[in-house]
Length: 92
Image (cartoon, rainbow, N blue to C red; front, side, top):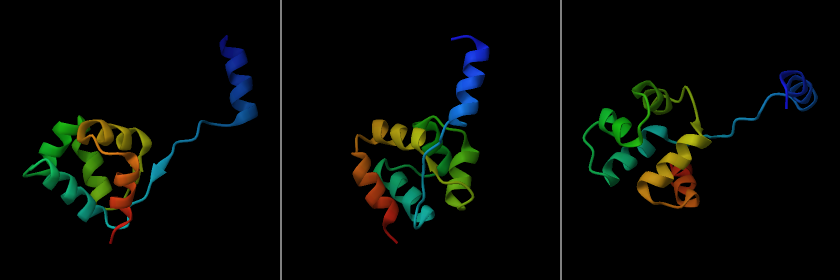
């Protein structure tokens, strides 16, 4: 597929969709993730998940939602089903 064909398909179908998950209480959700791995700080959580610290900070303050990529990363690191993670996110 050359660049021109790719541009036509993007124009026809639009930009790719980024799936995100909103959290009812992001502070509590992040705290629970930290507790599960016995981590003392958000910085340690970032290192375990291999994500930049501003990402966890923005999720904690509600400025961004949890991306599908991060959700998969948490699933891999914590060995939890996505359904359990989503249930945790919906708890107040």
